[in-house]
Image 1: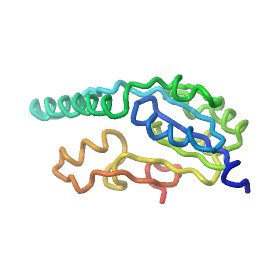
Image 2: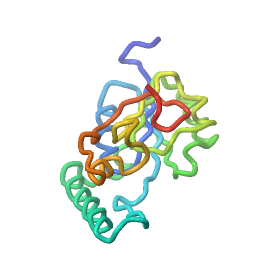
Image 3: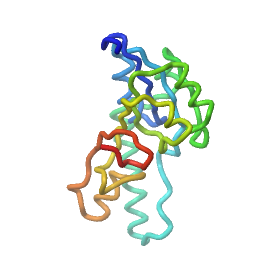
Image 4: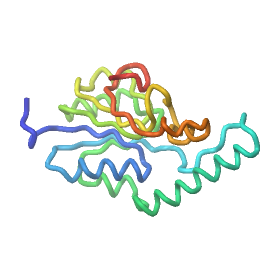
Length: 177
């Protein structure tokens, strides 16, 4: 096992400023890093079609205000700027679990993988990840999985389920210890 200063960490990052903010801490450390950056959807998601007019307006307001606050706090960063000093594979959602991504990970041979902001990791990519693989999930698992997990607890009047979960990556979504 390599010492801490020689640890190799593969970062899987989304392209939103909140993802960049968290990953900058790893990039500014003494760790040897590489990254896979997945282009995410628009910062202002479309509301679900099956909600009331009032809920639709609240959904739009929530994500609009989130965008303002996150822009103020995290700034407007571009993935190419954040990850310019480390080996990086940029991909779309449909390419995340590809052979190309799996080969990129194998070539880097990480000791650890830290994931925040990408889609569910599946084979063939999952098979090449080391045992030390941690995901930062915005939402308290198992209550809120998937997307918009900091919105839905308030929508359902359950603010006590707003938070984050660190968990191991397993084949099932947001289910690892």
